[in-house]
Length: 462
Ligand SMILES: Cc1cc2nc3c(=O)[nH]c(=O)nc-3n(C[C@H](O)[C@H](O)[C@H](O)COP(=O)(O)OP(=O)(O)OC[C@H]3O[C@@H](n4cnc5c(N)ncnc54)[C@H](O)[C@@H]3O)c2cc1C
Image 1 (cartoon, rainbow, N blue to C red):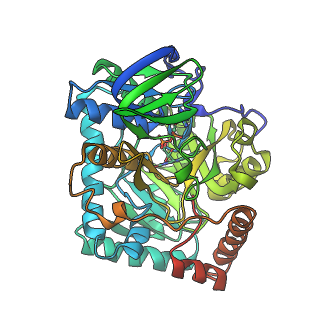
Image 2 (cartoon, rainbow, N blue to C red):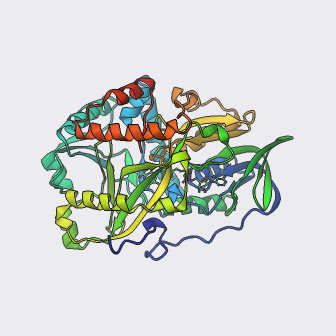
Image 3 (cartoon, helix red, strand yellow):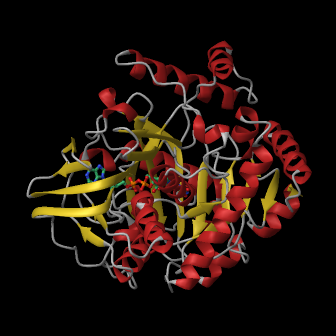
């Protein structure tokens, strides 16, 4: 850890090939637009891009508080998953009658991301490698076997793997079995995806205003006025893609808890180190406890290793200082060498954290405000790289008043159970985290607290 710089690997301009774009000027004066999009993460970028693709004549402006891709969208693990429901299990439990359609729409969404990347020439190191979920405890082998059966019943090409087969792919003494999904996940360079979407938006005529935090939303004749420090935008319609950040859209606050997720990146592996691990197929890997790690290779053969700890600060506070958490980084590093003891001596070069917008059902929810003139999508809970494109389509469907296969979904129409106010929110999240840790130690068995939350459809995850 001694060499680890406290910065996001993907956003580090000193890493070869990371060309951070120059920021666009902030909003100044009064502007008008047909559609104003708030947020320069994937949520806002997909909304602006698809709005222009659907209707090139629509005048679109995107307002970003800092710079495009600085937040979760530029600092995630880069697992671009088809699942719209934070995994099949969560979706099947909540919407058993709809899960086949949700899975179909999710696959269609991932294909749509791939074809957009190709159509706009976005260089984001897109690799459709699939993902291997690995079991490191016997109870997880059983869970993966059940999940494989459910996915196969939906016609998906997933394969269960014995411990030996998993270790032939990626070698760790901790692996007991696995589940490989070859189609459902792609690996991307997250910041390059955000920057590439930004570029594509600009080419289609979207006006981008960076360093423009929207402080207020005011109804006015014919639409809404968004106010920032140096100016305002009057727009007929507004799409809100502000992620986990508290802002003027108060109604989402009951449903979203901003939590911090953390990751490390190693130095590039030498060919001997790589040979000691295998990983010839470059698939994303995640382990299968309730508290899980996700890990992958970068284009220059570093290992990105993240997850496990998720940290909620009292009152939903979001602070730059929380991006660094030495205790978590040391814990992650210890877990890394337990998984890959053959890499002893490898150094970490980057450590970082970022905010995810957790909600109690673990996947995005949708809504409108200001008499249908504003649409929002939030609550992606750590699996928004792919799902934000679907959320963008839902927001645009809603703003256009369109009745589509997306807007008819129960998953889209229903809201999650809200989190209670403080201090209950903090106490509840801490109690749930303790119960989840206990379940991981106790063969996956869920105690009375977790079973009660399950019964009311609530939970806490990353
Ligand atoms: C460490 C980490 C690892 C992750 N790994 C994965 C992964 O591997 N796979 C996966 O699918 N997901 C992952 N995620 C989650 C994923 O990154 C998010 O779900 C996704 O990026 C959400 O996109 P977003 O646009 O909604 O939010 P963000 O990327 O947070 O963007 C929101 C933007 O809105 C802006 N904004 C907010 N309020 C305002 C305002 N009032 N005015 C103007 N602008 C505003 C913010 O400045 C920000 O740029 C991870 C997240 C983290 C932090």
